[in-house]
Image 1 (cartoon, rainbow, N blue to C red):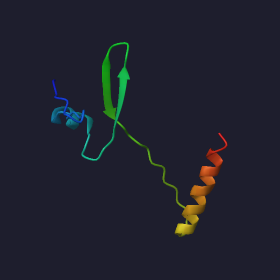
Image 2 (tube, rainbow, N blue to C red):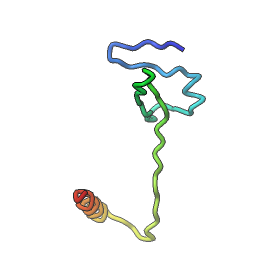
Image 3 (spheres, one colour):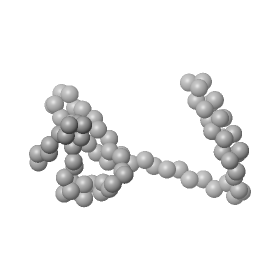
Length: 77
């Protein structure tokens, strides 16, 4: 299937392919290059979200503190 590259180097994923892969407006896709075969690979980017229940209300101060602690933990690596 041929698609045109626009002036801004954008391409449109044909509807048939979007539907088969379940790609919707606002979704992200992962783009990689297989240099050995000269092929661009586009696949849906599926982010797995983790949800935890705290069994208590959380305010902005709690969130800010958790983010700061996480950033400090990650800066050690």
